[in-house]
Structures are given as structure tokens and as C-alpha cells.
Length: 423
Image 1 (cartoon, rainbow, N blue to C red):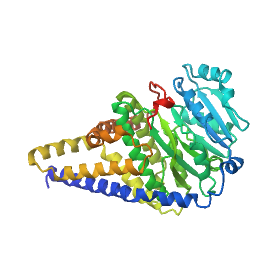
Image 2: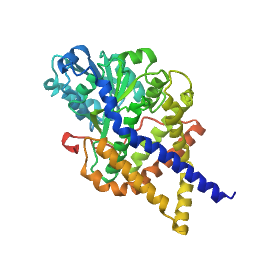
Image 3: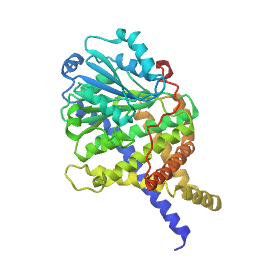
Image 4: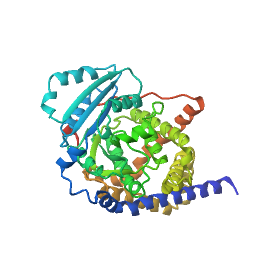
């Protein structure tokens, strides 16, 4: 068998694996509503006031050089409809004007946001990384529910109230909210917007099978006893959110996806910033997979079987497939030009557009016009993201081989304003 046949069958295999996985997401996603109904069953009887008497929420916001948007993030929290609330902002050794901006807000403006049961605490510490800042804030908190939030994120006014109702279900240990792109007013922003909508639509399936292993740091929700029982964030892992949520899966915790609790985050606005972000994500995920490798094909009764035998193995397969992706793209391009056989490409194009459309229709409450307009072209534009993912994979391997780490990365932000978010 010559090399061309090997590559051809490899492409067919990748196509089948990818097609089957995405088909599972398409077919199961709409049933998320049933999972949500089951989760909330018996909880409708509680009024918002009842819940506020029972559950105190602490939101921990780590910040490092976030002078541009940190106040808008804090104000969005303090404007929340949920009243039994503690907001904790931790400045992790910022060298910009983050501290000055916050102190000015404390002296001029904070009082109008505070009520009897709403408080704001601000701490400064030496730079230790995001995980260190989160752990510092959690240990200073007093809430029954701990929420982690990025300093470039804005919460919807009712997000915390919606979240609290879910946690009246005592079986729930942790959850992830619905994070949307807040700065989708550029070419790169729109591409990431569709990517986020698709990614969070997939969380519907993860919720149905209790297989969620990525609780976004932009909107992660945990019961306090989770940290007391299983420890705090890994300060050495640069994607501490992925590591911690994967760790919870090793303990058999119940993790939900709360789609109607929404937040808006500022995504990278330049390709260089996006490359840095994806490198951190990729390296952190690979480190996490290695650290919790016992989850793969595990027969441990605590471990979720859908996660262990399907979701994690196929995810790792996709990561490793990036190593040969450039060669496969070249091979497919040459094959199409020489054979003029475009059937598989057409089938794949139609299938992917169908999947993106379903995610927009069922998985998002903001059906933005710019997403719909760009949708027919997203199949091709997504390869910009794929090339960045390929770079991130190779760069991650280099870091692993040379035993080097990456720092808590920041890119130049513009900040999110309420009117900046497109609904």
C-alpha cells in the first residue's frame, strides 16, 4: 500500500470520527431542555427572596493589568438583581492603573451600588498568577456559592439569580454559565462569536451526559464545600479552570450547564493575541490530560463513562490530529484539483453549515444578524482558527519538550461597555 492510500484512508477515518461526534451533538443538543426541566423540578416553588435568604453568593474576580475593563465588570456584578452578594476583586500584582481605578471607584461611586446584603472587597497581592489570585479570593470569601469571573467579563443582570435557583438542587456540585462574545463587532470577533456559540451549544450534550470537564473561568460556579473537600485551583497550571473541573470529574461530581445564565467576555481582537490565548489553552489542556490520565477509558464507578470512553479520547484524537493537519490539507487540496471529485467536500460543507445553524437557533438567545450573514462563509473562515490551533499545538509540544511554562498572559483590551454588547 503506497503512502497516498494511507493518507486517503486516514482522511476517511478522521471524517467518520468527526462526523459521528458532531452528529451526536446535533441530535442530543435539543434534548437539553428536558435535562434542564429535571434539574429545576421542584425548585419553582422558591421565590427569589426565599433563595436569597438561603444562599449567599461570592464572586471572585482575579485581575492583572485590567485597568481598561475591570470597573465595568465590577459594576455589572453590583448591579445584579441578586441581593445576597459578596464581590471580591483581587489585584494580582498589576503594574498598570488597575489599583488606582478601583480605589477611585471605592471613594467615588461604590456607595450607590451597595445595599444591606451587597458588599465589595478589594485586595492587592504580589503577582502569583491567576490560580493564586483565585485561591486568595476564595479563602477570603464567605458565600455558600463561589463564582469565578474574569475581569474582562460582564454579567447579565439576572445571571446570578438564575444561577442561584439551580443550586437549590442539593445534588449539584458545580456548573458553568453561558459565555458569549461581547466584542463581536470585528471580523475576528464575529468568527470567535460563532465558535463560542457552537462550543457552548456542545455543552448541552455534556450536561445531558454529566460529562462537562471545562468550567470556564469567565463564569464558573461551585459550592464552597467543593474547595474544602477537593482542594483549590492548581496554581501551576495556566488553565486552572480546565484542570479543576476535570479534577471534579475524577471525583464523580455533578456538573451542570446553565444556558440561561449569561455573561459577555472580551475576546482577543488581534491574531497575535488570539495565538497567545490558544497557546495557553492548548498547553493547559495537554497538561491536564496528562495529570488526570486515569480518566481515559476508566472503569472506576466514579468516572463518567461517556466522558472516559468517548469524549476525552476523541478530544485528544483531535488535538493530536492537528500535528498532521497541514499535510492533510495539502493532500486534500491536490486530490480535489486532480480528481474533480468534490462530493465529500460538499457533504461536509452542508453538514457543518447545518450544525452551525442548529447551534444558532437552539443554543443562543442572541441570534445576531452578523452571525447569520457570515454563516455560509464560516466553514472556510474557520480555517483561520484551525491554523492558529495548529500553531498552538506545535508550540505546546515545544514547551513540553523543553520543560518550559507560559505566564499569565494579557493582551491589549478595549473594555466592554453595556452598549457595546450586541444583543
